[in-house]
Image (tube, rainbow, N blue to C red):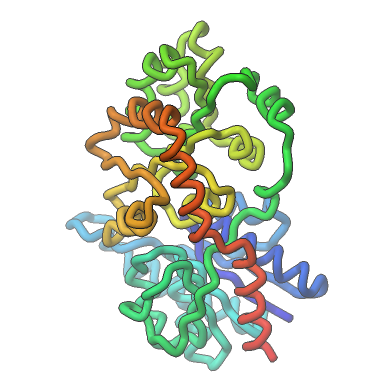
Length: 361
C-alpha cells in the first residue's frame, strides 16, 4: 500500500496521524507512507522524529480579522495546490488520509479530483471549515463523536474514536514513575497539560495557585509549552520546586499520566481521548480561541455525562481550588472514572486502518 497522510499544525492533529501511520505499519510492514504538512509547523519536526518522511507545503490559514497576512493567503494556497499535485503525481498513493490542519485541504482536494480514495479523520465534536468542505468529496469520514450527521453526509460516517499514542497504556509502577519526576509517591499529584504549544490562561492559573497546591500537600507536574516555559519556571522558587515540577514539553507522557490523580488540560480532541482511555478525572479549560469554539463543545460532551469538570478561561484563577476540591471528593472522582470510560475508543487507530484497507481493496 502507498498512503499519504496530510495535515498537522498542532499536536492534536499530529499525534493521531502518527498513530494511524504506526497502525498501518503493524498491518502491513511493507506499506509506503508519506506525510504532507505545512512548512514551519510542528509536524515538520515531530513526524521525522517518529520515523516518517514528510513534505512541506507553504500553505497558511486565512485570518478572520482584517490583517495584511491575508494578502499572501491566496498565493500560498495556489503554490500549495501546485506542489500537492506534484507530490500526488510522483508518489501515486492508493489512498489519502486527511487529519485536519492547513495542509490537508490542498492534498485531499487534488486527490479526490483525481479519483484517488480519500478519508477524513475528524477529531472534534464540531468540525472545522476545511473538513466540512472536503466532506462532500471524500469517500469516508472517521469521527470521534456521535451525532456528526449535522455536519457530514451520514452515509460516509464511521464512528471510530481518536487514535492515541500507543504507549500510554503501558503498566508502570507508581514508585518507579514518581521517581522519574522526583516526587513523593505518598502525596497526590496533579498533571497540567496546556496543549503542545502551551496555554496562557492555564499557565497563569497554575502560577497563581502554586501556594494553594503546596498548602494542601499536593504535587504538580506542569507542562507549560515552550513559549511560556522560562516565565513559569521562574515563578517556582527553589523551595517550591520540591512540589512543582516544570517542563516545556513532557516526552514521557505515559509516565506522567500514570501518576496523575487529576489532570488539568485544554479540551483538544486528542487530550480528551487519552484521558478517557486512561480513565483519568480531568478538569478541562477549553481554549476559546479555536475555530467555532470547538473545545468547549468537546468538553461539554463529557461534562453533560458527569465525565469531567470544566472551567472557563476567564475563571482560570480557580484551577488550583477546583483541583483540590475534586481530589478531596472521593465520590466525585469515582463517578468521573466510571463515566469517562464511555468515551474511550482503544481500537480507534486499527478501526481507521480497516477503513483505509477497504478503500485500497
